[in-house]
Amino acid sequence: MRHHHRYLTLLLFSIFLLFCFYFQNSVVTFTYNSYFRYETERAPCACGDCPLDRGRLDWFSACYEPTVHLLLNSSNSVLRADVFGWWKGLQNVTRVANYTRVVKNLFPLFPEEEHYSDAGPDRCRTCAVVGNSGNLLRSHYGPLIDSNDFVMRINKGPTEGFEKDVGSRTTHRIMYPESSVDMDNSTHLVFFPFKILDMEWLISAFTTKNINETYMEVPSTIKANKDKVMILHPEFMKYVYVNWTESHGRYPSTGFLTLMFVLHICDEVNVFGFGATKAGNWHHYFDETLTLYVNESHAGDFEYQTIRRLEQEKRIVIFRGWT
Ligand SMILES: *[C@@H]1O[C@H](CO)[C@@H](O)[C@H](O)[C@H]1NC(C)=O
Ligand SMILES: *[C@@H]1O[C@H](CO)[C@@H](O)[C@H](O)[C@H]1NC(C)=O
Ligand SMILES: *[C@@H]1O[C@H](CO)[C@@H](O)[C@H](O)[C@H]1NC(C)=O
Ligand SMILES: *[C@@H]1O[C@H](CO)[C@@H](O)[C@H](O)[C@H]1NC(C)=O
Ligand SMILES: *[C@@H]1O[C@H](CO)[C@@H](O)[C@H](O)[C@H]1NC(C)=O
Ligand SMILES: *[C@@H]1O[C@H](CO)[C@@H](O)[C@H](O)[C@H]1NC(C)=O
Ligand SMILES: *[C@@H]1O[C@H](CO)[C@@H](O)[C@H](O)[C@H]1NC(C)=O
Image (cartoon, rainbow, N blue to C red; front, side):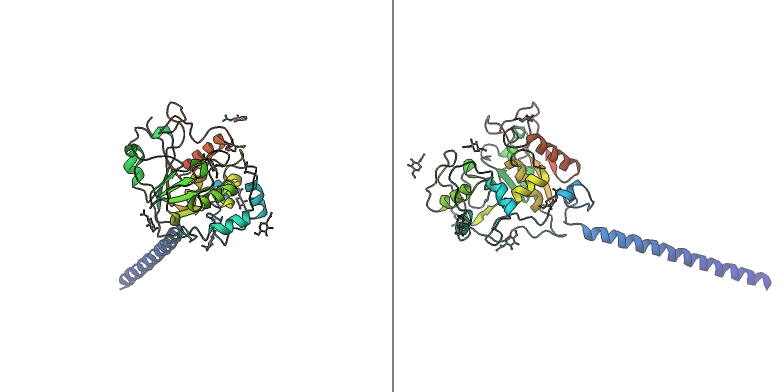
């Protein structure tokens, strides 16, 4: 009987221990789960790897400003004094028009709906930024580039005759008056205004067609869909200059501005056609003109280091080509 009693105590004690163990385990599981769920909820996009993920207090997060004005519209067109001062300093033409008056004529003409504020945990927007480097030749990147949701090309970069290496789709083309080309009806024209005259040219190109000269001869009009025009905000240009090139050079290059623009509207950034060829040449894939990072107004070296750093921190993926 006594023996029996001891056996029962032991059994109860074991059950008690088992309960403790189980309970402790579930506390751990519970904690782990909520931690895990908390982390998942913070994922800013639906891609495997979001550029904005890893909410650390690091270099990227310190520079990245999600609330900066990206595209110009009638309600955000009044520029901060520091932005206007910096941006106005870029103009190297002698006749400078009244900015307020020019902007007033922009938006009856061009659309101003908000395109890209749909970032969130359900979105995985993949984007290809296609620069014009000769390293694209013989890369066979065409299908890879075309498989992105957005394909952004810069300035004159053609597709015809180079489809195998650069792809054939163009959802967005970045340009300014001196680099303007015709495009098809479905392509967004993303206009980079480096001066007030550029905005006047844009208006003229779709209306009177009477501006045919800036600091050089420019086309007085282009073939493009007026309803797909977007204009980069001068505040964004200054932000890229201050935050991302740390005020090196006079202003950021078009390629660098484009990369930063894409980093602010896409969840996966794939970079093609940037940098030199393997032999160290800096020419376009379509001719012998020097590419983006020549030493003029832009801090090519610093921009390149920044791009390398973005790659190392897995915010972007760089495809270097074969030649
Ligand atoms: C203009 O852009 C700002 C962001 O820069 C946005 O908040 C606002 O809704 C836009 N206005 C219009 C009319 O689309
Ligand atoms: C204006 O700037 C462009 C490029 O930055 C340059 O090619 C051109 O020579 C300049 N023109 C004048 C008048 O300074
Ligand atoms: C520009 O034009 C606006 C109105 O169209 C006017 O209020 C402003 O004073 C002008 N600015 C300059 C610098 O002339
Ligand atoms: C281009 O698209 C616009 C609508 O955005 C349409 O009105 C126009 O007819 C189209 N033009 C051609 C040539 O397809
Ligand atoms: C540019 O336009 C002016 C008049 O608007 C004209 O005299 C001139 O010949 C034009 N230049 C070219 C290259 O078409
Ligand atoms: C980035 O820009 C924002 C606003 O333009 C500014 O407040 C912030 O200090 C800048 N960060 C860096 C690292 O320059
Ligand atoms: C660019 O030019 C400046 C002087 O004009 C020079 O100090 C600098 O080393 C040059 N950078 C490169 C990368 O050639």
